[in-house]
Amino acid sequence: MATLTIDACGLRKRYGSRIAVRDLTLQVGRGEAFGFLGPNGAGKSTSIKMLLGLVRPTGGSALLLGQPVGTREARARIGFLPEHFRFYDWLSATELLLFHGRLCGLKEDVLRRRVPRLLERVGLGTQSSKAIRSFSKGMMQRVGLAQAMINDPEILFLDEPTSGLDPAGRKLVRDVIREQRDRGATVFLNSHLLGEVEQSCDRVAFIREGRIVGMYRMGAWQGERTEVEIKASHIEPSALERLAGMACDLRLEGQLLRLSLDGQDRLPGVIRCLVESGAEIFSVIPQRVSLEDLFLKMMGPDPGL
Ligand SMILES: Nc1ncnc2c1ncn2[C@@H]1O[C@H](COP(=O)(O)OP(=O)(O)OP(=O)(O)O)[C@@H](O)[C@H]1O
Ligand SMILES: [Mg+2]
Image 1 (cartoon, protein in one colour):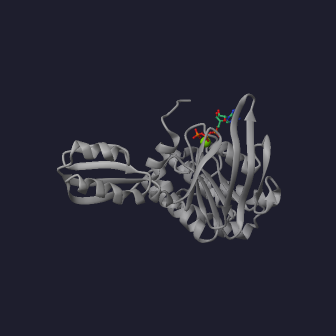
Image 2: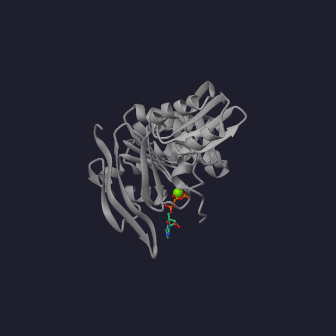
Image 3: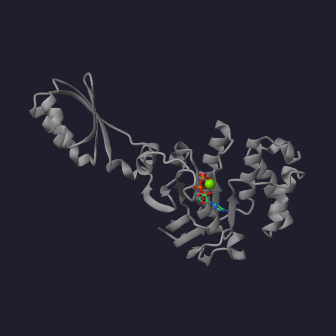
């Protein structure tokens, strides 16, 4: 990994008797899009707020862009789209971006060029002079996204950026994430839309009850767990009994046998077992394990809140 932009070690947050985040230890590199996934209440937003210096950790430490979190210097180089935000709604979209740009210390001539370009980018070019109180939820979300990018941030934190967005808006977020990553920025993304995360992130971490329970490079889990669909005839019950010791989630429907293996290297043994028992095999098709499949496996049954 080239240069680290986020380097967190043992961050912890307790609210009264409730521990929101137990141990946040992770490192994210420059130009990386990092997805942070977990069920409701897992501690995702609290983690982001600790990294931004908006919530004081109960323990642990973190460096952002090589500096302790919360310093003015680091904050000026970071963009943030919060999960719940309220903007001054009597301002127009242009005025709001100018205001946020000035807070970041940007010069007027830079802002005059950048604000129209950003509003155009998020699809609000024709709405730029309207008061944002008249905006729909999705339009507000788009302004929020533009606001997060006003300072050409080196790290962009997006907490549920696709909330309320239509399909074109979701694609916009995906494209923006790619553009930011391609220009070398780090993107830290909280999202429940796993299909979106799968398309736009390089790496993902799963958080459950305030603790990271898994971290993967995108798609790297495919080799770890393999779902296979085998089309075969003459599958004897005795063969199924033997397979039950080698695979799990065994299901036979007509000539279709579906099973789940701990790794691809178990597949030849399964095929051998079937052939030796007299089965005729027509096809063996490994199934893709989606990020959602992995999420549900890692999180287990919904415990409720
Ligand atoms: N300001 C607060 N005071 C007390 N408890 C809090 C506070 N903020 C968060 N919590 C608690 O901390 C836990 C983690 O909350 P957090 O908002 O980080 O979850 P999340 O993963 O972002 O969930 P969601 O997917 O619903 O946005 C929850 O149990 C929540 O009730
Ligand atoms: Mg949240």
